[in-house]
Image (cartoon, rainbow, N blue to C red; front, side, top):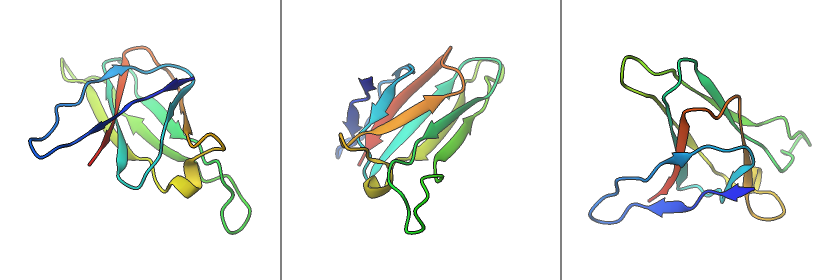
Length: 113
């Protein structure tokens, strides 16, 4: 597993550093952290943040998904996803698992303010 380091927005702002998405990515979920994605491939990519804790009805079928659009001309598709609440997405290790329908040409960053 690769824990995505969270980058923090300071008073002077932040230009996030993106890195290649990989199978086994995880993030420490918080109410203030979001995942940002850029897709430079010709097809959309679905990203899933896996629910780790059952809801009040006992179901863990509450994954969060976002579709990152395909590249358009020379402009990569972009999407953002919240990672909180931690009580819903954090596993026993305090991290949330992320899955991708594809990883080629997909980059990601975890950003918090």
